[in-house]
Every structure is written in C-alpha cells, then in structure tokens.
Length: 286
Image (cartoon, rainbow, N blue to C red):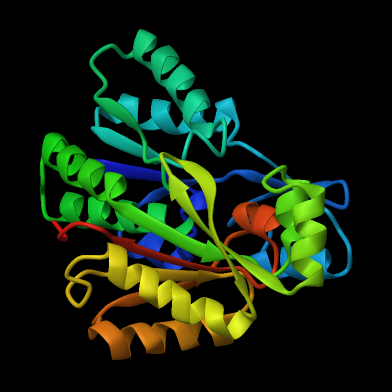
C-alpha cells in the first residue's frame, strides 16, 4: 500500500500541489477581527494581508488535537502507513500536538504505522520537503526511504527571507520595539534565516533594491548545484519582487525549476505583507 503523506498549512503549498500529489493537508488557524478561520481552507492570504495593511493584528493557533485524531484514525482504520511532516516545533506547538495524538491513536491501533517528523522548516522550505516526500510516495518508495531522503532535505534546507515592515515581527516577539522603530525609520531591511527551526537575524541592509541582490549572493555562498534542484520563493502579496528574484536566480545559476507561491495566512500573519523568502538546499539534491 502506498505511503500517505500528511502536511499542515504552514507548508504554504497551493491547492493544486495538495491535489496533484495526493497530500492530506491539516490546517492551522487564523483569528482575524474576532473570527476564526482555517488556514488554506476558509481564508485567503490576500484577505489577511489587506486586513494587516488596514491595521488589523491577526492571531494564529496550531492544528487542533481533534483534527489530528480524526485524520490519524481514518488512516489507522484502513491500515495505510502515514508520515506527517510537521511545521517547525520552534515556531508552533503543532508538532507536539501531533505527537500526543499519535500516542493516543496508536493505543487503539497498535499496528498502525505512523511517523511524525519535525521538519524544523517553514513556508515553502517545508513545502519543498513535503513535495519530495509525495513524489517518492507516488513512485512507490518505502516508508524508510521517504524518511531518510526527506530528513536529509529538511536538515539541509536554507531559509533566507526579508520583511517589509519590522513592526509585524515586533508584534510576534521576534525583534525589539527599538529595533523595529529604528529599522523602519532608516529603511533598514533585515535579512533573516532559520537555524535549527528558529528565526535568526542574519544582516541589516539599507534599501529594498539591495536586499534581493544580497539574497542571491547568500544563495551563491550557501547553495550547492543550484541549477539542478527545485528552489522556492514565497511572498507576502508581492509577486513583482518574487518574480524579480526568480529572474535574478535563473540568470545567475541557470535554475530550471522555481516554485513561487504566496506566504500563507498563518506565517503571513507574523511576517506581514511584502515578505520575500527564498528556499534551497545547501547540499546536493537527493
């Protein structure tokens, strides 16, 4: 029986990806103007970004235990082996909740083969790991083959990103109020990355034009065989800059496959409109 791949909405993959690769998606939640929505199902990222531009401060919450219980039980009843690749445990409690529900469901179905993996990745960095898992599952790979390859991808996935307004990261506790104020005043664009699942500031760059160029330079410093691996760019309702970055990458490295998607509602609620994020492997593609 094929291995079922499960992912959550913080992978920022499109509906088309979930359907085409037969991936089960479990949604995190967004609360906007006191109404709760399911990320990727009952709210669009565009709605969140427009509301943020108008001064709204959306809140987010993890996948509910009930959702995990229902999804895991459904596959346990059919005996289909499953791997759930989770959003970084450093950025959400979703992984811990999934582990708790895994134990509960396996108490009732002790022979159920379910693996819950903390990718330590986010947005399309996480999405690229999930897509590789789904491709392998479709090719008939074993559970262990998928786990080995995709753990390697997750461990070597670079996340390089910038935000348009530090205020949103300040609200989420990622930068201090002073840093946010000074950064906005001086038009400083922060460059950040993800290290062991956590958001870490990398550099401060003055001027938005320089930041895309620097992202390509960091990619050159860290990436390996960039022409022959799929890379991804996610954006906070800023397709123009995302496409500009993609063009720069094609020109520099000859990259053949670039996925561009909007940053989803949950991550977007913390990063804000104008975010640009770049994802690639720092080791050869497997």
